[in-house]
Length: 244
Image 1 (cartoon, one colour):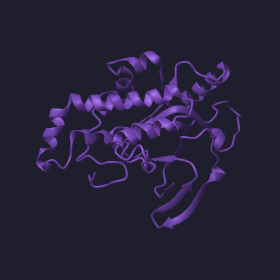
Image 2: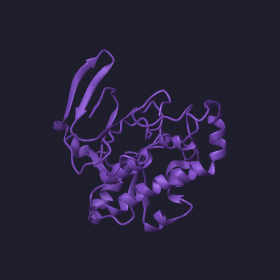
Image 3: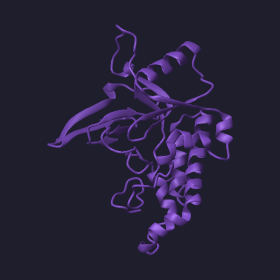
Image 4: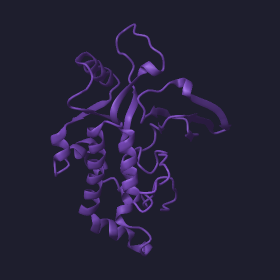
């Protein structure tokens, strides 16, 4: 995986990482090429939200049973796998998030189809789904120990959360209401996130069963719950210029 835009690096989709697994090389006069053997996203804090279509997501080639699957379904399955093999709550979170996105598009279909009408069927309302903020599974966020005198290496300064969302002006960390960590570790993680000004949203089975998708409305807020706003044309992951 390679990126060449310098920004805040967020490893995700793995249980551990190390700076030793990152290589930097001079790419050109505009920046540095970054390569790693794990998934990562780069957050430009002067830019907008990190979306499904601009996060550099490396979607594996479709398998034998995925060749005819919709792209949205393949994305959801990929992110669910990255949330951890035994993380059933994480996989359910991803599925319900994509259900929420589909519900939002269905609710505003008339408005979206009117916007796309001049393009004579080239785009569908569903194509705006990829403009939604991306949930980064098992993400490592920069949140060093706030204790005076505490010292650590680069890896120690990052805290892992179940999911992370960069919303353009703030980071959101998503954690399960019932943590699998010991109480002291759970408390320390929340303290570090709070000290780093990273808001935490917790969720449980009732949140995922909510037919009104209240969890995701709270996560994204009113502006990004209308994730298609500000997007001129739909753009799928790995494409540019509105192509799908």
